[in-house]
Length: 349
Ligand SMILES: Cc1ncc(COP(=O)(O)O)c(C=O)c1O
Image (cartoon, rainbow, N blue to C red; front, top):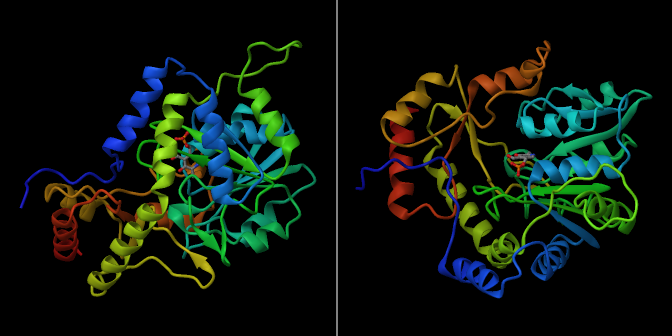
């Protein structure tokens, strides 16, 4: 058995992806152009939305989606605490006030009850990430009557009651960072059925050749990135199949382990972007032991947002932060690596 470390995450790349990137470079048209437009079209068709705008990151996608909705200073935006700081940053870029709420202790998605309690006359939007690939409670959250941005950074291809996530938000955003479900190295996408909102995003993502002046950004994706994106998108079903296959193996093999397995909810089809288990006590010691055995498990969220903002009273997020462990699960794992992960996890837990 190989003795090298098994990383927590790794992209799934092939020669066909490299060739697609090379052919864009050889064409000499490397900035945002026809390949980005093709990627936008194929991606929106795949999700089932009318319009799409590619960006250079998921953070930029969320930032521009908030601006397109008109979010500004003194507005409030509801976000969950148990998510990466990109979500908090995007809200702060708009100068709106982030209203951070606790999460559901089973799915780690935004708590519907906590979100309801956070609504005020100033609430302008709610950002709903589908954490670790598990769809959030979209129906209940839609019932709040607040413009909802679905954050599908971790959930491309997940289904909620038979429909792809990303179909429900007034705008939905994606990330194509190196280790996401699909990658363009760095990158993002905004999708919507509203031509007006997506036109706003497209206007805001580039500053040049405008007849009027307004503060705009440079948040464009390049044709080089989009070429890889198109190649990755054509492999999405295979990626998801492989994720499901490894997840069902983990469910079988980890039955006797001393942790709680991911919760499976009716009507919510998880894609296992992350395989997150909850330990009995603080996860520090088992995480260290996994590392010693060269299997890189990780806390799935580095630092919750209520901790960043020095807020108290987030019991479910605090527990999740202390006790959750993400076990490596991605399509490029070899059979040998999967077997090593299973053996090490069973030994430690
Ligand atoms: C839920 C969520 N939203 C937004 C982002 C930000 O995406 P990016 O890293 O492409 O800016 C991430 C990235 O990890 C994420 O997980």
